Amino acid sequence: MGRKLLTEHVNVEGIETFAVYRKHGGYRAVEKALKMTPEEVVEEVKKSGLRGRGGAGFPTGLKWSFLAKPEGVPRYLVCNADESEPGTFKDRYLMAKLPHLLIEGMIAGSYALGARTSYIYIRGELLYVLRILEKAIAEAYAAGFLGENIQGSGYSLDLHVHPGGGAYICGEETALLESLEGKRGNPRNKPPFPAVQGLYARPTVVNNVESIATVVPILNMGGDEYAKIGVGKSTGTKLFSACGHLNKPGIYELELGVPVEEFIYSDEYCGGIWKGRELKAVVAGGSSVPILPKELILKTAAGEPRLMTYESLSDGGFVTGTMLGSGGFIAMDETTCIVKNTWNFSRFYHHESCGQCSPCREGTGWLEKVLHRLEHGHGSMHDIDLIVSVAKQIEGNTICPLGEAAAWPVAAAVRHFRDEFEWHVTHPKEATQPGAVYRGNLVLA
Amino acid sequence: MEPTTPTAKPAFSPAAQAEIKRLLTHYPDERKKSTLLPVLHIAQAEFGGWVSPEVQDLVAETLGLAPIEVYEVSTFYTMFNLKPVGKHVLEICRTGPCMLRGSDELTAHLERITGAKVGQTSPDGHFTLKEVECLAACGFAPVVQVREKYYESLDTEENVQAMLSELKGLVHRPILPWEGNLPNSLQNN
Image: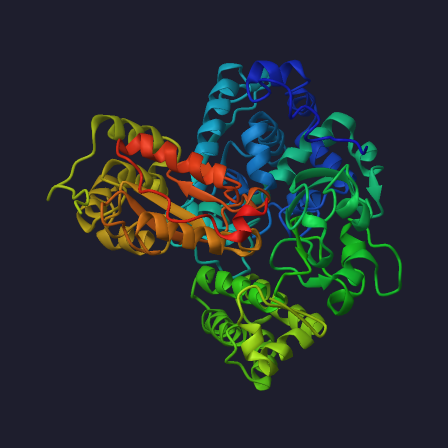
């Protein structure tokens, strides 16, 4: 069993209340931080090697150190709780079960950055979690951990929760800020980056829920100690959301470095593939990252066991590797139709494109349309090259990474499962039978 | 069908007004517009589960915004219903991880028993079916959201029944009878 730094007390009765959370060591990290200088807190997070847990994996301490600090201008810490990357459901769990952990991280983080007002932007669908957070925030105010002069330190902070309205794109940090300002969630051109001009054009840091929560164990144990956990530059523990055709889907906190094979098959984690079936493919880090067939997710192209770390999952680049992303781990069994699944993801990105950039607005539409045609037995061989070409033309040509997120899954699906796409063209009748699936030469009806 | 139609000139209840007043304190004075999304949620809850043009005008007036600033936002975010809806809006997740665990079959099943197609309201006005994208509950798929509640693991007949009886309790009317058995993929679990 690996160490659990975030979810250690998750099953304690009443842990969502201030009293029980405090009894289990809660708010010690805030007490510790308030005795340090803000710079020292940033330094601890830097030393920990913590990488953003939302998907991009950018070092959190470094992001914090970029924040502009002009005299007399307010700055903000905004928590990105707009969790909506398909396959990812860890932040919802963390907030609903351990609201005070996020609040504690927000206080320590806001102190480090010198923010006097901070926001948690939560996706609108999670209104029930918003209420859990608001209740916990009220408790923190009552206990003197929020509001004026926190614990007599002279530092004051207000913390508010803000609901979105249903838009995947608002998980992109500048779209999130637009949305928080009461506008459509259209991502902004960068530069200027939020660290210079963010919320209300003021210096802002946007961090994922899990990143902010992780600041708590980092401060409690010290950045150096935290960095000893994990493998290489993948330090600490990370929450993985396991879903799809697994015996035990759910949220698992792992010390980074667990072999992928162990994660999928061991009873301690996902317990293998459901219904006694074979694994076919995995999307390891949320729907945007490249899909890998069984052979390549369990072992790298060089034959090394693949580990649940940033480096190991991306070993081989996009040719034979993928990305850790958000930790949304989607397993697909042998009966899964890769063409249908790719079409489903393309429909998602088309639906969620904000429409600002033509390559994404038009390109995601074409991907959905052509994939629909292939899936439904009306496609041609040319269509397979067409979707690869459309994906290429989206990639790198948009304001925000939604373009890449839409392009990568398509390119990877064709790269690794081209024969399955071709089979849809050569065997349209079989391919459109309900439940039919391609397995080499086999058709299962 | 009798959709809940707001009066020509709607007004927020005192409770809603108090909540809006509280929300306004969360943002700088000159940034009232930041409350737009939370206030639209309140408006939708207050006026029958959707935001009519009149209701959106009320939101604009309340926050001192031009009506267009509200319209352009309400049409961007999928949670705001711009047409009348039934008493219960069943928001069915259709994205990959839910599809892998039977959301297509679940949708077809819910269409059969409510008598409404996706995007429609059932003839008795009780259920509106809406397909939505990922609800961040992929480990408990397939998932349906009804207002603030998530109904998860709807791949067993038992769980679908539990959701429907709960909603039935809320509408005080007998639910439509089950027509046939659950499709295979919903039974295998």
